[in-house]
Length: 262
Figure 1 (cartoon, rainbow, N blue to C red):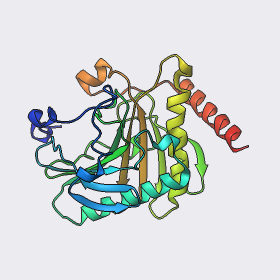
Figure 2 (spheres, rainbow, N blue to C red):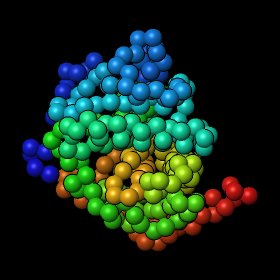
Figure 3 (cartoon, rainbow, N blue to C red):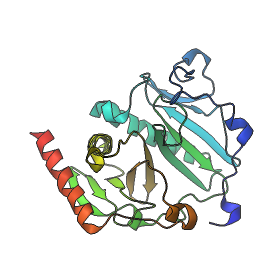
Figure 4 (cartoon, rainbow, N blue to C red):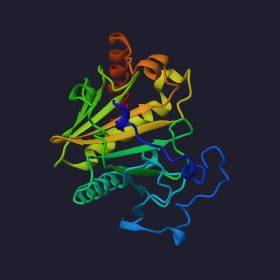
């Protein structure tokens, strides 16, 4: 990445943002519907709107409030609710594409105190980049890997060539397929990280989720949040767990899925 591709962060704007992940009694603007402004679209209690605190230069920052449930999240919602959410996100993304002013558009979600987010209320962000190609460093090999499960047209895999590492789970779905199939596997992957990853030796309370609407597929990448290694921080070197561990995770997930389906 060249210096001119770096996203410029507006510190003074960021200082004005409310926070209620660590400060649980803090103000939640997404619960205060009366004072929300700049709506772009709405579907039931899902709302797409402009981000009030636009902290990045040369971007258009929007967000999607996932539901009216402050303590909700994908990993505790029903398949039907999650499928409607994914469909709404895709609709908003396609609408944003028609604006015709962006070099790239990214879709992502923060959850938990280590994720980079500031608000507990579940929400996605859709950000249009005016001058940066956010996908320039993303290759097809980063979105595929060792196949674990297939549900209809959707597939869950574990990256053997991750974006940054160590353990990244991907759910892929052809664009025209059933969102419900993808929703099930995304929820399953998040629950694995929150409940089972590292066999409970380390509490996983945060994750990032990225949607890559590239080529003829939509890929959802779920990444648990830990401290970044010096190899990633200093050299942009990705790390991946050894093959034995990747296969152990594969076997565990296959057995967990089988038990939950019975």
